[in-house]
Length: 317
Ligand code: NDP
Image (tube, rainbow, N blue to C red; front, side, top):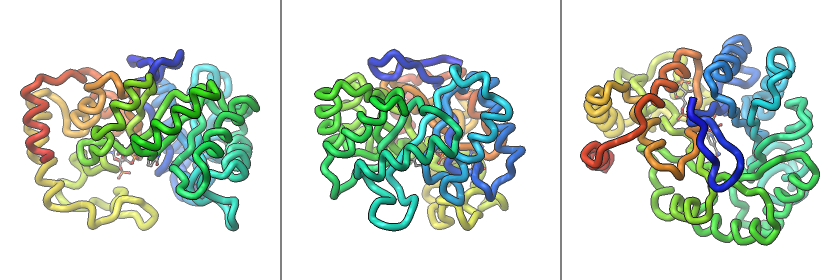
């Protein structure tokens, strides 16, 4: 495993990190979940990404992760980077979501309790709140660090402009703000229109989520929607109508380039995100250790020729 420095910070992250959004809730097989976590760690994936709402039901991924950690990995806490987030709906009433100081700090306490941890390594504002003043959300993250409940902080789903405004406040407070988590893949390239420049100019790391477009950028959907896949599940966030002929057509074309590079389409999609230094780590999801093993294979070749990049751009359109 290679470890990349996260922006200008002292923290290094593995080129591949594991997210627990799907497949770690109470609805999922706990043996498989534990296997995926220990397999990842054994292969140098030291970073595990959670959020208050991961499950289903919300909260259950943190609860299950906490149990696995305590049972099998407690002695490795100092070798792990564990993150969580607050922003999406967690409990009823006006204090159960978004970016108020009340919600953000209460949610972090709940996350720590569920995971049976004293602190998280990275705590994120999961999404910008159009109604709460940005200063309030940023100050809540800063307080989390001052309380010793988070070592570093990050933001997720903030636009380039919102990120610049947040950085100005973080700088004033001297908060250890080190990372942005955007949705970024071959099929979702909005962060290339300004956000990546803001991050790189300010020494902030980037950890793209849904790098495989939830499984679309793999071989999984080339012959329809297989049983047990995310698109087939009722509680999954990949809807059947997102599996379009147009996208599958692009995957088939990308596969030609992947084969020339001796990679699978999945490996090509991950390696492509790591082509720039601004990307610190790619945050994958998985439903089996086999998938994690294949995805680790991406790291063997993360450099691209200009010709390959031009061909990829032409396919993606
Ligand atoms: P991906 O795009 O990597 O999709 C993961 C899914 O792709 C897997 O569950 C699996 O689908 C399929 N897959 C993965 N590897 C392979 C393979 N080798 N072969 C075939 N299929 C494969 O990422 P996610 O959408 O899961 O997001 C990753 C993480 O990002 C999340 O766990 C979470 O931590 C974070 N995230 C953050 C968000 C935010 O707002 N900040 C929002 C969403 C995610 P299947 O289950 O069908 O086998």
